[in-house]
Length: 107
Length: 122
Image 1: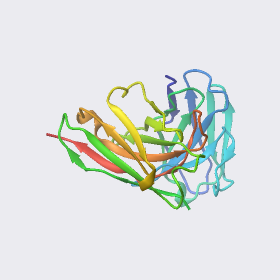
Image 2: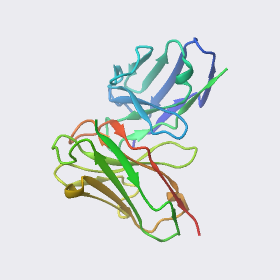
Image 3: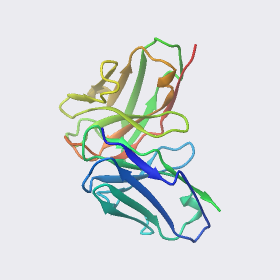
Image 4: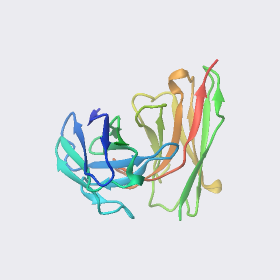
């Protein structure tokens, strides 16, 4: 199965600053990459699919980029509600697999 | 809008069989446009896809759990279920039901239930 590796494990960012999260696949997943946000005690929420496309209702400050084996989620100006754990997921090859997550913390 | 709600036993003993149900509200589980998955998350860890049931009723399971897992659907109750046999402490996790965004394909998940914690302990 494809192994997804996220870095860093944790990221301290001040409100209003940019956050850049990385996700790497053990083999190419083309552009079949999604990102999720999870807050404590809540289910994951779909943010990005197809590497670039924002899910319904997701603010424009969230953007995705990359292809093949390297992907990035950028949050352009962190808001208080953005402090959470973010997971990437590949759906290029079965079984679908997730990264271990990046925790975005308040600096 | 469509919502998902899991229900389950909470606490179990090793070797027992786990049974979870996901009730689909606000829409039909048998609409023919959505497949349904189970995903789990051990405490403080990442997410693991368990398996899915297609609108046709056929199923697809993770290789790591195949042989222990069964997913079924009850269209009369608008729900689908997960059965996991011979549980161990390693099966302790929050279990989520989710909607596949793309039918009959590997996919991402666009709707999730709130999750139910299952603890396996003697």
